[in-house]
Image 1 (cartoon, one colour):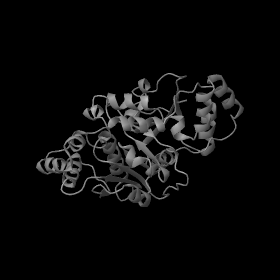
Image 2 (image 1 turned 180 degrees about the vertical axis):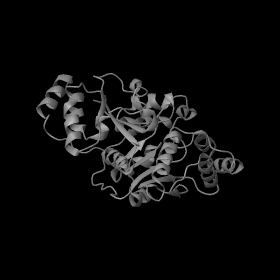
Image 3 (image 1 turned 45 degrees about the vertical axis):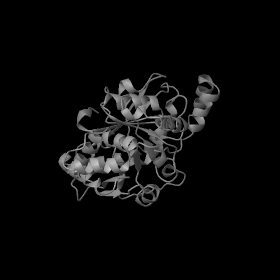
Image 4 (image 1 turned 90 degrees about the vertical axis):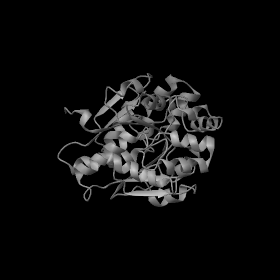
Length: 323
């Protein structure tokens, strides 16, 4: 089917983000590519379990049923060869996912193919691909955490939750907080209350999602957008005013003032939560699908000593190589 991918929301998803392939990935890491290939061929007719981003993909694809025009397209982007990727394709077919496009790169990096498929959001288990995507600024990208053990998605609504700074907005204010403290951060946000916050890596994506809501009709669309942020008063005013200037309507905003995000997220039960800090994600990921938004390579936050802890946390949640 011919479709202009520039006119739809395109999600690029790795096979390990869509399905639970952690056992298979451990075979690749601990043995070799041939052992991995043999295992995949032997298990070819065994359906893969749902991965962290499965419910989000399934839910977003359901939006196409509510419109005469196609709104969402999903592309499987995997470093498998076409031969070892056949099990992934069979699992997609088994679950009835409306996914017809795929890219099996045979070990080559995924990032260079993002533009070819007009990808707006890359969901992956491999930090290198997520980092390249974030640095190019052409699409949003997130590092998917392990699947929560007993997550049950909302069947009536599609809930997507975002952190604010370094996700929807740039990390400029976050850098002030990290280097000069909370009081200076609050003063800066109060002084600049009417100054629109600069775009962050997910600014384009949230605008696209807001347009989907407009196309479907706000009263008809099941898509719900939420912000869950450590900001509180008076810094919350700049967030609200920025979104208003963007023309983006969010359904909910939770300004926590440093409280744990875990409890709010456990009630909200989003199909996915995007945050830049592992400290907010590690516990939350046990209850709801979670993913980390990496800082740009040229971000000043990358130069801070505590950023080494973030890098260490990233390594815990990815394999040595995405297959």
